[in-house]
Image (cartoon, rainbow, N blue to C red; front, side, top):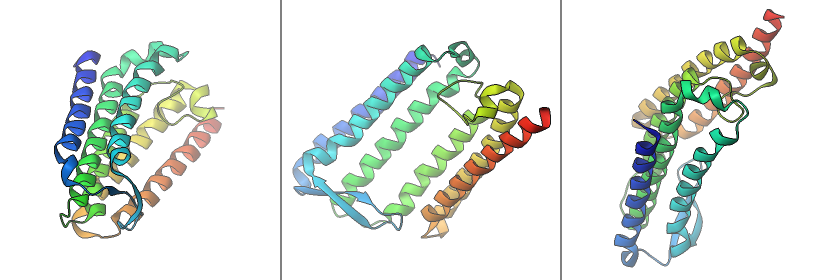
Length: 212
């Protein structure tokens, strides 16, 4: 798909998010639960209008940001080799936020479900896709595992991102499957993401030293 098609897909998802909010607006309470702790319990609230607008606004910002970054990156020519995966990322992010908007709406309408469990499904898919992006990404200043060692050497970048991609896809699968069976999957998922990121950074340093 071309970049314009990805942008159209993202805009469509944002419109769906806004349309859901408009449709259910009169049925929702004046104060909405809009933030949940890692244990899946609501712990933050917002006025209705503000609560329904924040996620579409974030989605618009993400699409705009992702369109700008390749234009200002000194390594912009490298985006051509992984552009479809890069563009797919802002579609996945807007899709994630559209799912989050739906969860917020239905939670506040009184439907009974595990917010953390449902969110884990979406996180699992998102993490897996980010793993694919990492495996495909070439050197740039904005996307990927950007350490002094990956940015200094293309081979270190490629090796680090192949490892990072595998780790993030593994985290995605664990998160997605764990959503079916573990109430604490989001806590485990966050720990695994942090561990994967640290492992990738350490690996990039070791690979750089090896080459030197």
